[in-house]
Amino acid sequence: MRVFKNIAVTGGAGFIGSNFIRHIFQDKQFSGRVINIDKLTYAGNAESLADVQNSFSDRYFFERVDICDFKAVKSCFEKYDIDCVIHFAAESHVDRSIHGPAEFIQTNIVGTFDLLEVCRQVWGGRNDTLFHHVSTDEVFGSLGDSGYFYETTPYDPRSPYSASKASSDHIVNAYHHTYGLNVTMSNCTNNYGPYQFPEKLIPVMLLNMLGEKPLPVYGDGMNIRDWLYVIDHCSGIWSVVQNGKIGETYNIGGENEWTNIDLVNCMCELVALKTGKDKEYYKKLITYVKDRPGHDRRYAIKCDKIKSELGWNQSVTFDSGLSLTIDWYLNNQSWIESIKSGEYLLWVDKNYTGRD
Ligand SMILES: NC(=O)c1ccc[n+]([C@@H]2O[C@H](COP(=O)([O-])OP(=O)(O)OC[C@H]3O[C@@H](n4cnc5c(N)ncnc54)[C@H](O)[C@@H]3O)[C@@H](O)[C@H]2O)c1
Image (tube, rainbow, N blue to C red; front, side, top):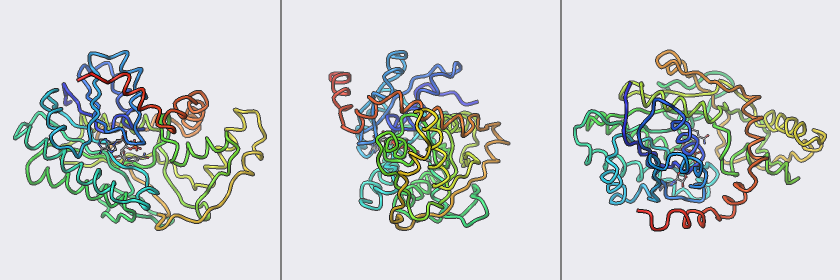
């Protein structure tokens, strides 16, 4: 098992990154430090890790840095003696990539390149380091009614988001083959769970239900996604970082396919149970809207490799994961308000001003 002392988590203030940092601090075997490198775009909220900061103030550090700022990233590496990078930072919302692709090219491609360059320059030929790249199943394109994505499936991205992620995946692999950088990679299906910015399907539907607003479903609602509880994604990444083969990619998935419309109906029923309202009350809010351009029809992944090689498995059923997620949003209205209004930046100023 690989052991690292100073792990840089990029994008650690985002949805999956913040869950990941909390997850590894719960691992009793882990005694290293985590340096959260995050620019705090609209999607990042350093306050999501206030509990970690309180409990692990000697091992958790936050640096508000843009991964495209080569000098600033390099000085983080030198300041903390980084020996592992787990790279989450990205522009991550497909709809935003359709309206404004430039940020996606900048952060997802140029930013990943900058990080790799820092690793190459600072680490040189060291063999006790690792760059783990967090990627998506969307790089593989769209499936018909049958079939799955495997690690060997050729890339066929369709949106500016997936194309930018595909591009960064190729650059990561190129740095391994060309410069001998120790890399691992994971491609994962759709995540859901606490701390997800309220623009993605599950939090949008949930908050609209609670606000009695229309529930917008794209096209005919028959697009299929494979859903994985975020903590299961985090445990998969952690197992690849510790034990995955260098230079290899691992698919991580939920093996849990849902059409969008079935998922929204299921959420209506669960939320009705929790709020005591009739499920039809929520279902009546469902509104079909014009489809997203280039909307991939179906994603489904085979994750046998990580299961057989690393012993990873999903641990949270969809019923319980969805229920936990709904409860979390119901109990964390202040987080939702602060991230939607940008108020969290005031919290950052208050807590981090003057901190080097
Ligand atoms: N959400 C999913 O379902 C899913 C599935 C598979 C893979 N992924 C991948 O996982 C990663 C994390 O996704 P997420 O859903 O947590 O995203 P997110 O949008 O919630 O968080 C992204 C984080 O990156 C930060 N960031 C953005 N640009 C930056 C920059 N230039 N410099 C430094 N920080 C920057 C943001 O401030 C934010 O904290 C992404 O790489 C994404 O492609 C996500």
